[in-house]
Length: 500
Image (cartoon, rainbow, N blue to C red):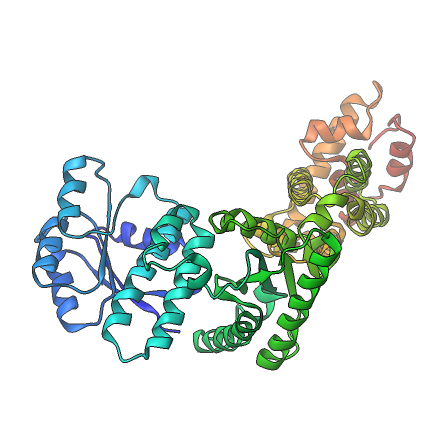
């Protein structure tokens, strides 16, 4: 799969770095190969290198962006150009458009979704240009153009009218031989874990073999396929018109079986999850039905991978159980956490992920619960002086870990490992032992002052600005400090002993 080469032109290095970090470029058909600090440097690179897309600022020294665009236009530059500027003034945009700029984007307002949408449009334009001038056969060019047209139809629904340019009907254009269709979203299970470490060439080979396999399915039933990103393939297939839902399921199951058979022949015994949309007859609604199939795939988290998941199946089951049971379970989890009861914590977490959620398959609610658990863990870490490095092994909180997990079992294992780290005494670094002496000394001082008044463990911990569980642990870890009698009194709720 050919990748298009990008040149970034901006006199400010942070701006160039912003473009590099905005999206995962490895998952696109573009690669960031060249950089220039002004228009003059950019023109020299264009003269000596093969550049497909230029992303340029407007205001730069030596030669600004508008001068660069004019020079490119005068020299019949065959690639595409995008302006990425701080200036929202119309006069800049109008001048840029005169020179054939594809898009005029504002730096402060640019999002990942914006960039991906623009790149999709640019990719189709570049493909059309190259198809006219290279040595591909008519058939090969036609296949590439169809795939890119399908991508626009499914991912950017506003482009539907633009596709009706060839004079053919959409059915003819996309090799669809019936009046009803379904979208199949195919996810390679374990992609993040297994495939992200592949080299670029290995990924290209995987995509090429998968596309060949899925194209054969499209030829058999009538339809087209394209690769989206991160192990996701989208297949639009014809389906017979039927009044029976069971008949529809049967036809789609046959297509799913063909997908799996062809993929086994192309890339081996790779587990895949297939999401199937409801059937539809209006191709302008392809984007809505793509969302259905993709949402069905997300229920892999609840049902496990390697399945065919129909959009209306999980959603029909979604309201079998109210969230009250899950909320009650969460409270048990929080109580176990703050009382340092690891056994009950793990038992409740296991029930939450293995049983409670199976009757309440709401993906967004699952994300909400995960966020609440993360929040509670952070509170606990703050109260017990655990650092991110101690618990997560990183100086930051890896919030995206849970979102990338594919099954409930993976999520439970994540929390299980986290609990083991939090409740192991060895998580407290040896360098911190000197701090135990300070806290113990402060605790003894407070006890001497207030023991006659009666002071509980909770109150003592509050005075010291730590959690009661952490306070108990530092007494236990402090060498030479006999805390057994103190623990006994704490368990009775009040300290009436002389602390000396």
